[in-house]
Amino acid sequence: MKKFLLLPLLLASLCASPVLLAKGVYQTPSDFLAGAFAGAVPKPAMIWLTGETRRVAEEILQHKPSRLRLRYWARGKRSAWVLEEIGKEKPITVGIVIDNGQIERLRVLAFRESRGDEVRHDFFTRQFTRARLQPNRQLDRPIDGISGATLSVRALHKLARLALYLDQQRQS
Image (cartoon, rainbow, N blue to C red; front, top):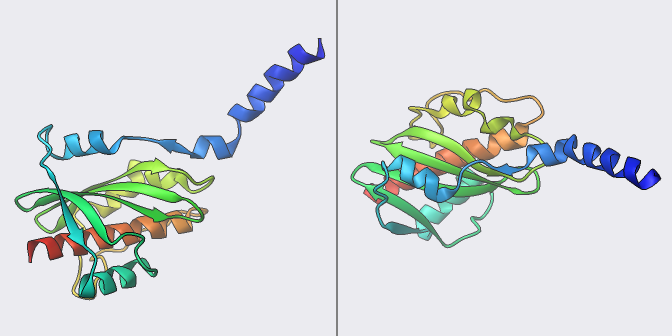
């Protein structure tokens, strides 16, 4: 009898856990790219993080990039980037579409942290729409934070700046 009562209680507590609720894959990179290019996804290209490009990437991320090269997809002045940055302890995967030097869309594809997943919602990510990179490598607009999600907000801010910078480099 105790086993039958214990099992539903255990399942209910697991379902209500904020750790489980905050983690998730919200969109696959392939679905994100299909949406970014209306189903006709171009072949991927690579940008090497060497020399000045690597130095600026380190400055933006505030740490050394984990990879020597990054993959992106582009057609004309439109590019899409699937990048990762650590929030507090685990990576946040973000898809960013840049068109004509400004962010068209920023979307959290996967969030693995136990807190801060509010950054995945449109009310937050819409702030990045039409953002451009200034000469000092900062965004041209302020991004409002979210209480309790400071590190996740910083991660998305860094990735937005990095994608804009790398888009400039691929076109130069």
